[in-house]
Length: 299
Image (cartoon, rainbow, N blue to C red; front, side):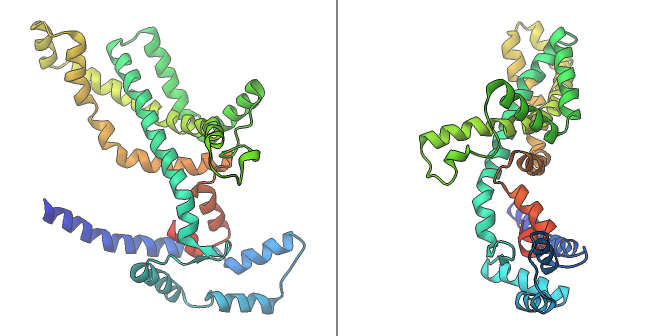
């Protein structure tokens, strides 16, 4: 067991290095560099820098160095010193920028996954035990809508409904009057009025697919001989359902964490951009647009 884990961890090292190099190359594939994007931003705002200034900035930030030299400077600092470099756009340490947003990203993704299970498990059990009932068809329609409606569109619809019907502005993590204020009960309560929309949006798509998985797996279990035998012996229906078929039908939920959690994180980026949430999604998108290599590569 320990030797197997050790081998897997050893293989993880060259895999991470390979992935980091490919990511570093892809980020630099578009024409130009960060200085090019920076100069374009200045021109759009009515300002400008000269060609000499652009060349000086490239020399200062090491953007004239070959790709391999830039990559080695970045990855060696990570390996030996734990330094992910500095963001050229924010003029701040990359690790500080990521850590201050990573907590909210993981919190939203984790809560969305839990919310997904809280919806999918009971609904899937109900649909399997009452196959072809009215609510089974209703949940089937919900599943098709949940898989078919894009996350960003659902987020916009919920924002509009909340604003029109409840007269609440739920964009951002907190309301404008709480931005920059220290955390207290009032600010935390205000955050709860905003955070439910990304949770609902992210959980809807995931729950829609897992409901069908739970329903199909439980239907297979309910038709197996051990269930028929238990019923013949007089085992109570609720005890029989929960103790055996449901437990076995839950196996795909555990194994699907590996795929569901990254899907929630990637979906979180789109939803965060629409809802103006301070997660890593908008930060990474901006870094890619501006070719802020160290920031985008580290994320």
